[in-house]
Image (spheres, rainbow, N blue to C red):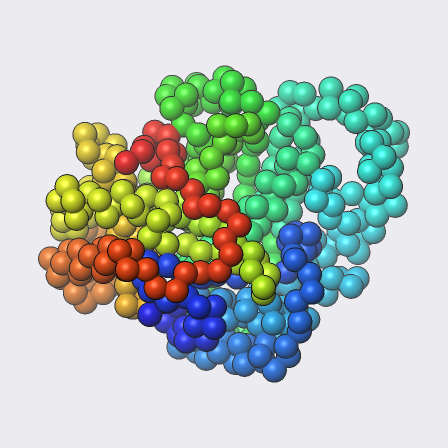
Amino acid sequence: MAAIASSSSAFQEQHLSGLALGELLWVAPDVYSTAALSGGQSINQTQAEQFFQQARDACEQGDISAALQWATRALCADPDHAGARRVLGYQRASDQWAGGYAARRLQRGKVWHPRFGWIRASDVARYEAGERRWGKRWLSAAEDARRHAKIKDGWLVRTDHFQIVTNHSRQAAAQLAMRLETLYQLWRQLFGGFYLTKAELLGRFDGKQASGYRRKPFQVVYYRTRDQYNAALRRQQPRIGMTLGIYFDATRTSHFFAGPEQDAGTIYHEVVHQLFQESTRSAKNVGALANAWAVEAVACYFESLVEHTGQNGRYFTIGTAGAGRLPAARHRRLVDHYYVPLAELSTLGTTDLQRRKDIARLYSQSAGLATFFMQYQEGVYRRPFTELLRQLYAGRDNPAMLEALIGVRYAKLDRQYQAFLEQLAAEIAAPQVAPIDAVQSPQSPTNSGIMSPVQ
Ligand SMILES: [Zn+2]
C-alpha cells in the first residue's frame, strides 16, 4: 500500500501502490500557481465535498497534516470550494483566491505576473513590450538591469510567504518565488502539525479566516552568479565554495545563485531548514545537544521532491525509492552494513555530527530514517516524528524523546528501519504499477554543501 497519509485510501485512484513510490501530494491552484496549471480539469463538487469532509474528520482526530492534504485535494476537485479555501488561508479577491498579501495587491489593481512579479495591471502591456517602471518614469529593460546589477540594489519580489532579492532579473526572482510558494504548500501538507494546533485549524473549519500570509516573509537572496554568491558570503562561511546554497539561522536568510550549477534539491533542503526554524518561535542552536540528525533528515527528505504532470494536473512525489539520497541510504544499510543505531545517533548534537568522519553516510542514513518515520506503515510514525521536531525546535528535546513519543524502543525501530529498506529493495526488484507520466526525472542525490555533503 501507498505510504501516503494516515487516511489515504482515496489516493489509490492515482495508481500509486508500493512503498517504493513514496507519497503523492497536490498543490492548490492560486495566484502563484495558475500559470503552471494544465487547464481543462473538470470540476467535481461532489468529490470536493467528500474530500472536505475527510479534511474535517482528520482535523478532529488531530491529524493536521492529513487535514491540509484533504483540503488541498478538495480544491483540486473544485477550486471554488469556499470551506477548503478558508481552511488553507485563502480569501476571495477580485475573481481570484489569494492569501492576505496577494489579496491586498489585487485590491490595489496589481496583478501577479510570472515574469515580473506584482505589477500594476495597467502596466502589463508596457512591461511586456520591454519597458520597466522606475517610480513615475519608464526605463528600458537594459537600463533597469544596469540599475539593479549589484545585489544591494537588487530587485525585490514579494509573495505571501517569501521575499526574494536578486540582481539576476525580475523573472528569475518571480520564478523562484513561485517554486518556493509551491514548496511551502507541500511542506505544510506534510508538517502542518509542526506549527498549527488542532484548535486553530478547527476554528478555520468553523468559519474563522486565517491571514494566509506572513507579515515577515521568509528572506531569500538570489545571486546572478556563483562567484557573487561566494564573494558575498565567504566572511560568514569560509567554506562557502563547497556549498550550493545555504541558510543562516542567525540572519534568517537563505542564499542561492542562478546558473548551471544550481541544484533544485539544495534549494528545497535549505528552505526547509528555514521553514522549520522560522515558522514558530524557535530556540537558538537547535540540535546543539542532541537529535541533530533529525534537523538534517527532514531537510534531506525534501531533496526527493519531484514534480509531475498528469491528467488531473500537477502533482508531486516525495520519498520515492529512487529519488534524493534514498538509494544511497539503502545501499549503505543493506549492502555496506553501515548503520549508526538510533540510540547513539540521537545523542549527537550539531557539532558532534559535523565532526564525524562518516558525516556523508550519516546524512544519507538520516534521509532514509526521515522517509521511514514519514512513510512506514502508511505514516503511523509521522505524528510522533513531527512532535519530535516541534520539541527539538523549541529546545525541549532529549536523546530518548523519539522512542518515548512513539512508544517503541530504539532497538526495535532500528530493526523496523532495516525491514522497511528491505521491502523497498524487493519492490524495486519487482516493480508494481508505476506512477503516471513523470515530466521531470528524479534528481540525482544532491550535494547541499558543507551542511549536507554527498553520500
Ligand atoms: Zn542541512
